[in-house]
Length: 482
Image (tube, rainbow, N blue to C red; front, top):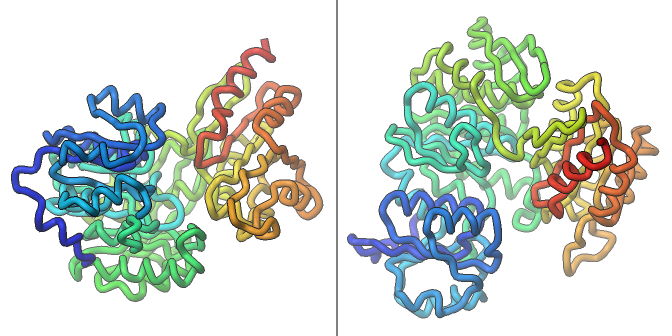
């Protein structure tokens, strides 16, 4: 088990005031809300104090300092939680280390305050973490198990990305990204997994992992944390996951498309915004399930949830009730609006595999409609040339693909950076697809103004705000279609 920072031993028993550095991050703001609900006085600081997180924090009564500096610590909080965005050179962290104020990273704090007394259900993998966590939390809640959770997206069932339940389970999104500048190990190594799901293992996060082997080493460490009486639910369709799962110190229940796995599925049927499928357990028909999400990958996500919930004693009918009532996650194939016959969808996909699965799922859900994909490469990995060629096979199910040129990464040779112009050209020449790239979001909106027509489905794929293109496009459609 990863050792907590030695300062944990100096946290006063009558802890009251907790200060959070980098509080406006999605996870940090959620932790702030959890701590406040637990009765602590919470303050914070950030350099990006603006909506929606600034509004969220203000609405729940948490005071936030705009900008970092020693002045934010003059009240001498009992504990400081240091976010992943904070660097060693940050003036506030420099002042913190000169003081004797105890500090923890975000994963350490989450583990210390909330995970330790509960049974930890950790969902890890390159893809699908947020969706599976949200499905699992919703299904547990519907089954009367009242879970606590923190998830990387807003779960529509609860209109929040965190919840303090009264049950015995904690659902954690196991991110392999590093913990803090003073702890470069992966976040999920702090989450004390007792039951874990691994969905996939691919190369990602090129800013902190040099190669796939480095990522696999981190997953190996994660799997070794599982107790002998724990459980690993592993997607055996992924060779990397199968390799890591073979080293698990606990029972493994594999899942995937192969009928020889302990958990498999078949007979998938797709509809607009939903899917249904038959679950097989050890080769025998187990149950028919449905989920209000499109795509084979979301059926597999649901299958992983079935395996976990069956293990903890929930019957198939109760699992199906939870899955079929699932209201979705914001920014995961979320229908934002249908305006005058044009449907606008928001999705978080950015890795080539996630983009491909999302585009395929949407085309199967909207078979008879023209699918327009708007893609913004925004992550540190996607803005580098690492995935330049992989993206070429990600848009085959799109009728029209529109790609924004990314903001260039600093200190990189231009030849090492991703080119949307080249991707659009390769999509046209190698895949015979209609594709075009633009330098700016404004140019994309101008292009869409003359392109879109009734019954089109427009899916915007980005892990960021994308210059508020979502609401701007909806407003534009309202104007041009009247």
